[in-house]
Image 1 (cartoon, rainbow, N blue to C red):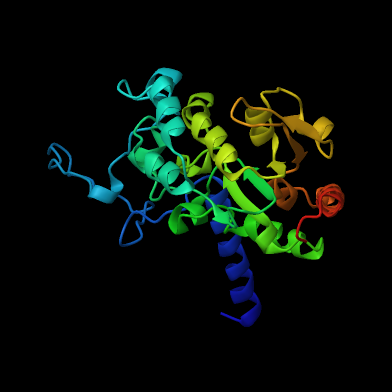
Image 2 (cartoon, rainbow, N blue to C red):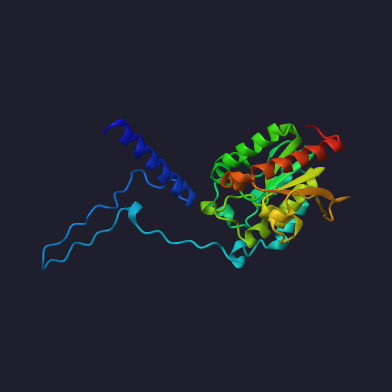
Length: 281
């Protein structure tokens, strides 16, 4: 095999791997690869082939549908229990402990780690995204994969100090295969999200993507119409509303590079608002 064909085969293999990851196949489940092109032995005419059991790795797996509203909250822990558990937390450590003990969201059953937050809890800016991905699930921290690296880069070039931000999500566990969380899963986490904001009490909120915007601001508005506009977030636990700005999610920008200008302009607007408040940049 010459060098050119080897390089072409390598590129094809990487492209196939990228496609598999995009389809949700981002975890290895067998110790050895399976040759599914292998022909099965054919019994001679008149003979019954022996009964065989396929290897464990080749046995068909049941298709698991996204949980319904009824199944996303355990019978013993419904919305009222989520609100009570969240309200009882008086510190971020207590809120994290409450989430670790909470069994009302089915995502916890398939996730590796609780993904709570990263950054400075006393920061003037709180950024809120949608849900953890595979990298976040492994490390137990939000925005540590490709979208997180883009986010950190934008913050750096916008002149916003890492110590000025605190980063979280509206869902604390990774949905299987990186699918979008259901309304019921988001609803199970929402009391903890609102309590999270109340305990941090940021001066500004950045909502990364439509799900975060719709959930926190209780709206159905499209992100491309709301992005870059300051909207007050109000909650009964707060003394005053907190200005919030919806922005495209970094993962969306990675898939749509033509949107880099918009997210850049929105972070410059955040920098200007932070400067006006006298916050650390």
